[in-house]
View 1 (cartoon, rainbow, N blue to C red):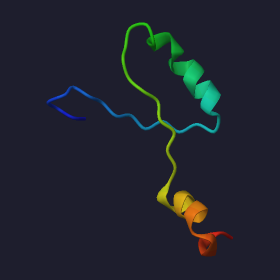
View 2 (view 1 turned 135 degrees about the horizontal axis):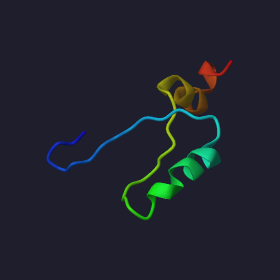
View 3 (view 1 turned 45 degrees about the vertical axis):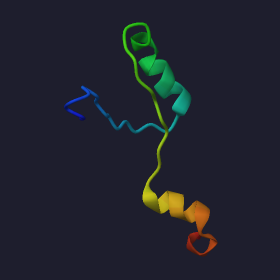
View 4 (view 1 turned 135 degrees about the vertical axis):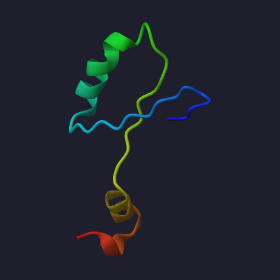
Length: 54
């Protein structure tokens, strides 16, 4: 939470990005915000460092 901005960050875990968007769709007319897919640091480094793939 960024107190001075009244901004909240929520982490939600889901295997299907499309169903996550559909879940939050009813809030769209009344809220502002964004949905941003993220990954763990381990998963990300597997994609950028071929030696860590396995």
